[in-house]
Length: 145
Image (cartoon, rainbow, N blue to C red; front, top):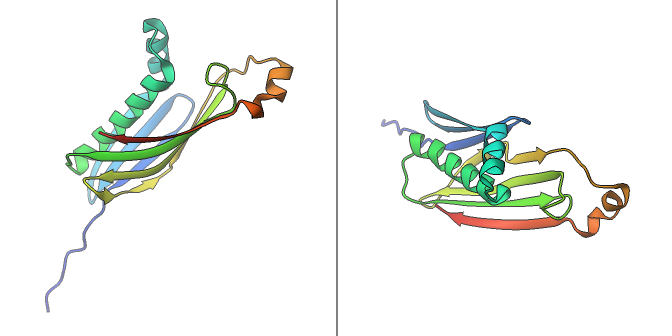
């Protein structure tokens, strides 16, 4: 009787708090920990005048790829996510990012902790807050890295 070794699937775990987003890549006994320090990233983007949301998404995508690459080498990663802002992006005080799918060379990965909430000070006036539901932004993103 021959025993077959179970095929171990890679897993991406995401844990977010107001200051750090931790990306964990796991496969079998291998683990990769990658952190995104939000305060440092946002301060750097503000100082250099970079587009904040676009730059944040690029950093998030590359950090997920790096965590996955260390435990599951691959050529191409596909990531699908959506983000929802509580107002137009310039006025939004909260942006929710939901990871919908991650694939590495066509293999679908298990994703745990797939929602990231970015929140800041809400400096909108009463009327802007009251009518924000009309300006709410929801975008779907598909990237191949």
